[in-house]
Length: 287
Image (cartoon, rainbow, N blue to C red; front, side, top):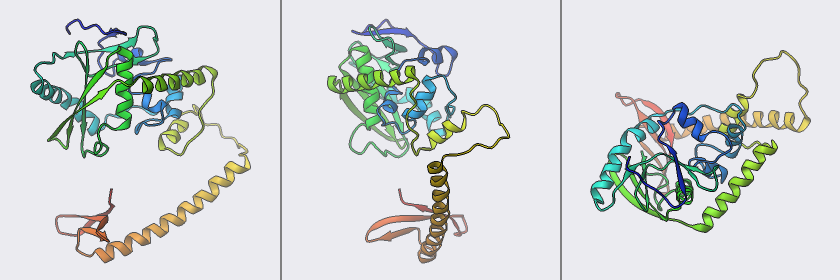
């Protein structure tokens, strides 16, 4: 990596993702660019409850390398090279993990860096969320990176559906950065004070709570009335809704017959997937 300096960034090093050094550079009471969206309640992958447990040193769901994550990583060099081919006037460098010179808890690991700007590389299988520009959670990530390093511009190169290459630009917004810094400081204070966020309705929160018990005691635990009642009532409601939805699926599939798309007033509400012999594999809701 060529030597690159930034106005406010201090380079901690270049670490292999998933390595011990990588984890150490992101551990403890710090907020990285990939975590700030969770602090703001905007992350599609995590939330405040999960992040609080992570920063408190408590068990959290492990990071799962899905096919989308794997191929995003594999395609990153190719997409970055496409951007470099389109912009030979910009000299890009590999980079590493940085912290703010005055705020050691503020961390960022951009994909590529030039002398006065950043490049973020993204991939998307469908383009969902990119219809009106850069998705908000990525906007948070990029603003955090720019604020950490003291830069004013980030290019985004995104490959959609494996063939649709697009470019975007995000300029530094001091007001957004200030708002995120304040939220991050308050969040880290709740970790220090041991003030756990409220339990929400997400699967990630349930999975995090599921991992907190480190033993199995064969004992009875008296549950408060409101919690017991809510569980029993919603469980019965869920059974009723599942039964009703099962009948609705049967009615819709019967009405669809050999067709593929179930339409209503010009709007697709579901579609049928089929085996090679034409029999139905599944009825899928429209996305």
